[in-house]
Amino acid sequence: MITPPLSTPSFYTAVFEHDAAHFVLGLLAGRDAVKDIEQLMVTSLDMPSDVQCTNELRAATDEVMSHVTDDADEVDTEIHFNPMYLPILKENLFDKVEVDSDGDIVAIDGFGNPFISMSLKHSIPDFPGIVEARVNYKQFPLPPMNEMLEQHEQLLS
Image (cartoon, rainbow, N blue to C red; front, side):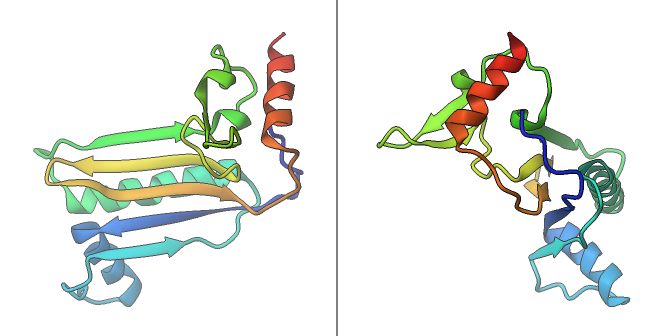
């Protein structure tokens, strides 16, 4: 398990597409959004914890989705936490490792960047991935991936 230093700030990035981009741009610009913008990326200010950052991101994306969908729309929401930040897992993380042709670890359970703690994706039938976002830690010193995996496995023993 990765344990970031207590003072490590977090921030989120979110990419809004189509109607979601128009809505967010309208909020930021204080007027009707320019309709020729199809994608908007927002990066938050630093926050003192990943929990606060995750909560604020979820509230913000839920608010956007409530304005760009109606009750008849089927919204699919996927939330995925980086298993390297979770203290107890039932599965073996070595089974979720992706390696390159040299045998080097490039991702664990789909997370290619060890500083991403959570990813979120809202989709509707006409626009898969209308909102995609993630919570990131500011960088801090990390041991090599294989050492982190071995430490994680020792926690489970």
